[in-house]
Length: 246
Figure 1 (tube, rainbow, N blue to C red):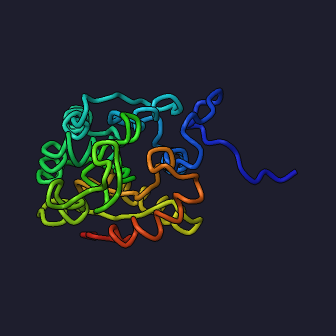
Figure 2: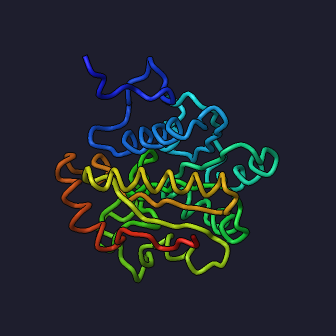
């Protein structure tokens, strides 16, 4: 019998995903693992996890990882990479962790051109901590801390981190992707690989922003959340390469 698919070595054999039905974290984690295995670098890789649903990453992976204080993943990754330059170091962070609580650390690492990779999950809301409004929450979108919907006069506008970091001189590669269709899943995998290759080639800071869903905190079933992502999230956060210095 021909083998069509086998579980990547980067995922612990006895683990089953505990993410909510329809959540894209499972897909992204699998893609990262596949890329690390295909590049044959997973045994010299270290992941720095943000707080929240991103931190659940640690329950499933078989490569080294550490959880940073909330928002400080880029700072921790900087120290790890500078102290271990031969290790592939990447952060895995949500929008609250990367774009709000850790905004200073995120922008500063990008501005210095640190030779690390950021996998940034943008689902427009705080997931694990209760559905609070995030920097990326859409105008009019409801959250536990904005029950009437995001009002720009009170809360400001959604933050576009890829475009913000593109104003800096140092970053080498920034791309925004999604996992809402099979085609976009493959594009996301290709982008992750390129970002990791950039680091191994000492090209500096790379970030992959992945626009995802959060059915639970959006108050939708998985299929409804995919429709919302395509109809509302992607017009606000258009997919594509933002910067590539190659």
